[in-house]
Image 1 (cartoon, rainbow, N blue to C red):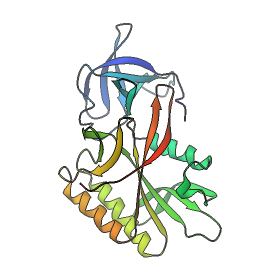
Image 2 (image 1 turned 90 degrees about the vertical axis):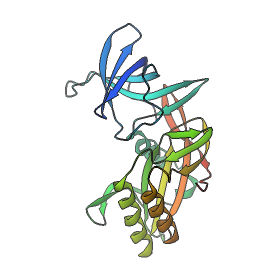
Image 3 (image 1 turned 180 degrees about the horizontal axis):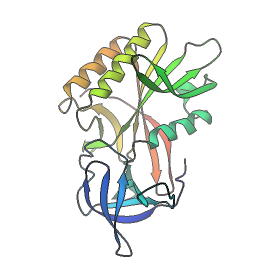
Image 4 (image 1 turned 90 degrees about the horizontal axis):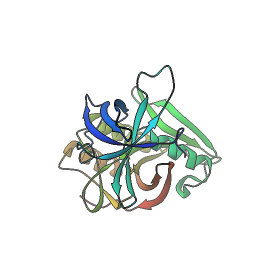
Length: 235
């Protein structure tokens, strides 16, 4: 999945109010960019960080730049836009690039289910139980090579796991799909110290039959795409 507009490099000055970031472009201009990430962004939002932003000329948008990547150097990146994983997974599903879901030929995003919830993808296929796929963006890493989720308390995330557990209990396929938006990690775990309730909800969901799948991404300033399945290890 390519970015809609070529990204340009910048320096982060500060991130604030969750969705705003003051940045300095390479020509010296200081502007405010949209930060499409409601999480803590632990380890990713230090002033002086080299980042990549996406320009836009959409008159409906108040901000002319959107923060997309953190540049760690040595060719490694983290994608910070929490909307990108859904787009990248949908592209991979359409192209049949996810072995776990190749048997499904119907892809319906954002379907209502459960108690006032929406599932990211509802997949259907001939002779198969429907597959309910919830997607989470993973950006935290506190140990070399190890990605972690979540980066802050997420009651909403725990609710999604409980909804998936009910789906599995009803005989459908329920999948928690973690997309690791980092190129420097080879395995994933739950950050149980940051959100014990989420870790407990995930354990209960797995015991109820919910599948847990993690993939990493190929990330460059040109685009982002699914790469390899990662092992999910115990915390």
